[in-house]
Length: 497
Image (cartoon, rainbow, N blue to C red; front, side):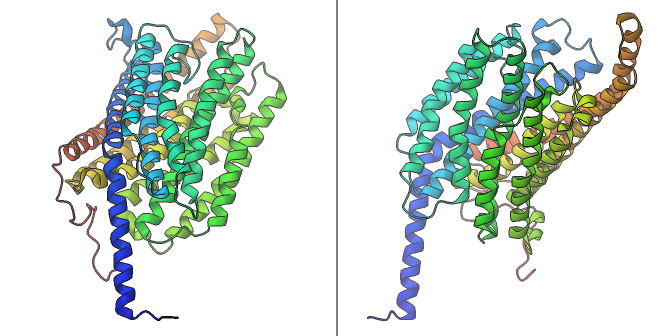
């Protein structure tokens, strides 16, 4: 048997590294146009829905604002904002991140990028058509299912062109180990069409009406976030953290256990939103048990993440990707703990019919999912564009504006829900005459929280504006030269711990 010398081993290692770099460059070249288009449209819808969120919040304590425009009444703006939040910003950003990471993990170039662009175009047609229907007052009244059925049909057809290529990438993967991120991404690609198609068929079926429509709506509203978006966010965390740290995830077996418990328990979640409603008690109980059991995958993900970061927490002060992802990971844990607490009947009876559930949704979509997506885009975009981010200051403004804005808006919404539920529980309306004064007093009491949320949203707009401008600079290739040190908040001193 021949023995290789040290020089031969070095040359062979260098040659393998060169081949890997060429392979990654070819994958990025095939993904550049479609992924950047997904990111661009996602950022556009992010700015639109943030603006609509500010308008809706202003109307709660300034009713005369834009009162002459019937299209911008509160009852029309809110469902448009919610749908653009889920299907515009979150879904498109998540799909872009999913496809790029899957291509990298599977080491497969995109076979036909033009089909992805066709699916993206049809997806945006569905968003525009559905939003125009809602602005015209033609909504269905189910949370995150407000669009007419044909608009979601367009989204499903578009998704067939998009999601199929994600599955193709996975099926054509190189033989060998399947990383945990791929499990979450493939699961999300399969769960989304099932959720959207089944929920639309059920709420549109003449055999399903009244209470059962509400059950389907509550189940879908919970799982479009906790199953579709959360799976993408967790897959991105499991990819980005080891990649930036340069070390493997602490425990693959713990990650596998977390994935399967997440997949099993999540599908039963959601009906606890109807606590106290005219639904079978066992349905609510199943939702409560599921929300509590979901703390098992939450604990495994949190433990795995912290143990992987152990000894390298200093990167939170240096790396934009790690800082955004770290914030999102903490928010993921907080969101699920609060959701489990709120699922108990004693708590649900207080928070029922308040904005508390809305606050939990915003906590999950913005504080967890969106922050992870921002971290992923800060990592992925330079590899597609060919230059580094222009300014660390812009990234700082984006992070602090987003963190303080999300934080303040979500906290004010949660406190408003708790206060509203507590006051109404203490003074239950017994009729229009006796209860109207108590109800109006409750709404006046909530005005301070709503104003605080408005301030938070203005900070959020500030942060998102810097991100949108910075992203535009990257598209125009106005960043720092390729090959230079990645854009960091603070330079890492050589030899520092």
